[in-house]
Image (cartoon, rainbow, N blue to C red; front, top):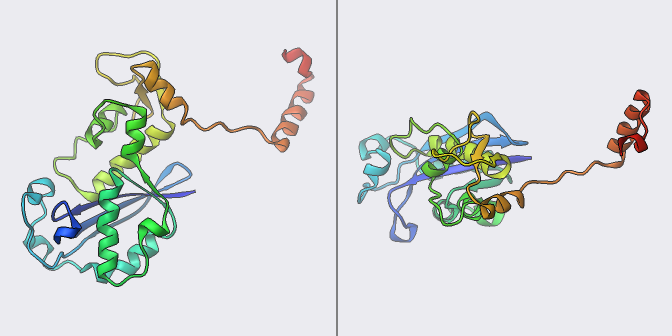
Length: 234
């Protein structure tokens, strides 16, 4: 199964107000493994940056002046995304911007119509109700090293989110809380369930994989080789 972890940087907060996408970063996940296959591009917004966006991402007008337009990269972007599931944090923000860019480029495709969209912020709020669920907060919760994130950047944020997402959807909870709010394991594999409600919400998301007929037959064959009957197991 192929999934795409996606993030964008923009000139502002609303495409309806004329704000544009200036950076796209994507990380590929296949069968719950983060691969080295990434997509990253800076985009010329065809206008001056406005407001305080520079303070967020540190991307300047001078830096973007020689970068491609969205229409120049739209085909390669859509080809790279394909029909994969897209995961983004506060996904409506990124998808609304990208759908608007696709509209301006006269593309007949909208990500919101062509791809399954999963919002990791919604997942985080389900697992950790009434807690901070920003990307930085989740990195801390899942022991993901975000020390290099001085400013927002689409690719680095997508990479961090990929690690956080795997923790959200398959990480292991420690049943014992500690003062730091982190588990004792390495990386993002361990997090802390600080309440029964939080643990219950997590367990509801853990996939249950049942053995099929072929698996059961192989298991029985192995038991017979060992000379162990089902009755002895119980």
